[in-house]
Every structure is written in C-alpha cells, then in structure tokens.
Length: 209
Image (cartoon, rainbow, N blue to C red):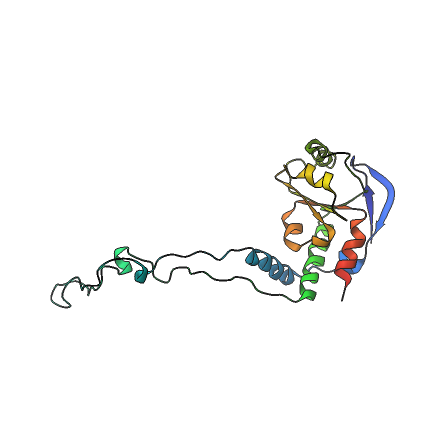
C-alpha cells in the first residue's frame, strides 16, 4: 500500500510512503480491539475504592424492639444498612489488571491503524523538527492540516523534546513515540499523523512474531 507524504505545511509532496499491508491493511478485528482497550482502561484503575459496611460503623448491637407483636418487620441492630448505617455489598479494594497475549495486542493495534486508513483519518507527515519549544508551532501544524480543535495523535519515531514540550499545553493534541503506540490512543484520536520515520518503527514493532 502506498500513501502520499505531506510536509509540515500540509502540502502534498512528490514522495510516497510504502506501507506493509500486514500492519496497515488488514481486516480490522473488532473483538481484539475491544479486549485491548478494555485492558488498557482496566490496568489504569487504582482499585482503591472502599465504603464502610455495617461491621465498620460504631453503634449498639442491641435489638431495637421485640421480635413479634409490633405489627412491623423484624428489626435487629441499629447498624443495619436499612437505617442508613453501612452499605450492603459495597465496593472493596481490588486489582482490575488482567493479561492479554502479545499476538492479540499486536492484532488490535494493527486493526486500529488499518481502520484509520480505511476511514481516511491517517496522514503521513514528512520528518520535521522545531528549533525550540513553542506551542504556536503545534497550533500552526494542526491548522495546516485543518485539525484545529480536533483530537489529534502525532506519532514520532523517537523522543523529540522540542516537539513534546511544544504540544504539552494543547488539550486535544497528543505526541507519542512509535514504540508506545497503543489501540486506545489511536481510536481516541479524530486524526492520526505519522512521521515518515515512525513507519519503520511501527512495522518492526508490530511484525514481530
């Protein structure tokens, strides 16, 4: 598969990028995508939620009234959740993490990238650099691709401090390394910008068996 390469000004160049069909042109597997996104979100949960149950509240355990003859329901301790003291089967601290096979996670990432290309929401950008950290440079980049105010993911081949620092104040613009690409970030973005050099890194990462 071949895609046009654009420069940082949003102009089409004469160059074309050749993409590996096994990574960028597969039939998206929705279930693999679901499992991978579920794992990322589950592993991000702290799991420290906790509420008090009846045994953790202070109060008398004396029976409130006699068992029979009152015309009402039986009633025991004042700490009964019915009276607002403690919660029945409330959340307790737990670990939400779970594991997935590496092959399945690679399949999910390939599926997400392939879906973006199908939807024409992925663009290859010529390698570029900023002379110094400046937010306006990222704003201009987004404006050149008509992505103002839209969630955009920029994938670069390696750590570039000037680009990363220029983007950190923009809420809807995220920059990641190609080795850190994940299904959730790709799907969460309205549009994905891939730097020219990042393609080789992605193909190497996702083609490993």
